[in-house]
Image (cartoon, rainbow, N blue to C red; front, top):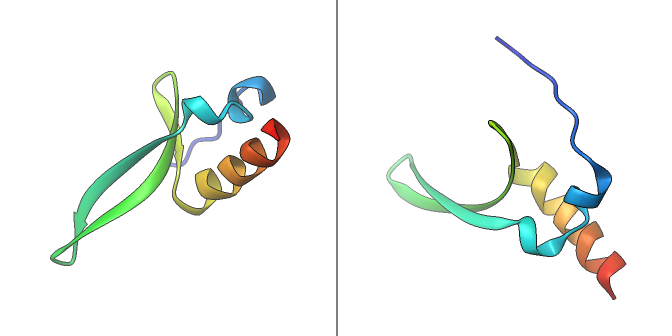
Length: 59
């Protein structure tokens, strides 16, 4: 089941809210950014792009 959710922009542009998670995939440990929001989280490429924006805005 697919689901969409919204999160406040202030949450997404706070670099401190991002964390690095790891998973085993095809025998290799992979690291990726995640942005938790309640029971949901933004992860992977989407989180990486949002984190880049957050870091740019924090300058």
